[in-house]
Image 1 (cartoon, rainbow, N blue to C red):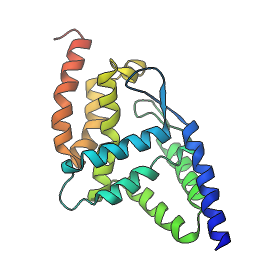
Image 2: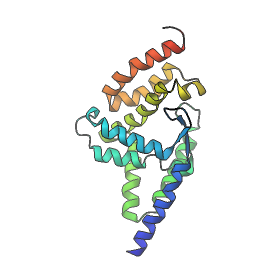
Image 3: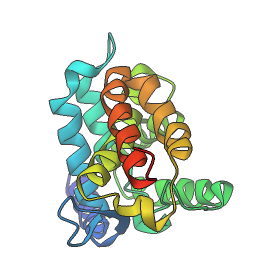
Length: 196
């Protein structure tokens, strides 16, 4: 039992490093960038509050577990902003290696269970994973709408890019959220581009 507990505590201590991984996105206040641990907590709260937007059969408890674990690989791989231009294949390799190392710190049963949930989220094929991915993509646009565009200006993001990179997964997993968000994006970009 001591070895199991030592492994679990070791993983938890390593997971604390997620608090030091800064994301490109800023807080609604704009005062600073959010860290990946804050992002994970905030999207879990989004999933819990917006659970009525999930499709039939979605198990919110599984979605919450996915969202809790989904960015832990950033401890090793770093954050890859959705509107940046990372090498996606290289990032996938880094994240897979990080998942092996980080989840491998846990006892075998937990390591396998957590890694399976992480892989399910990444694949975004199951109803639970589609909803989790939709929530993950929903949070930052809401923040950027509140803080005057935030990172959209830094990355010169267009409405077409948002439709493709954010709209597609949100529509797949939570179409009602996209129906709410899309008109607000249209209004923001019309004002920003001077077409309103």
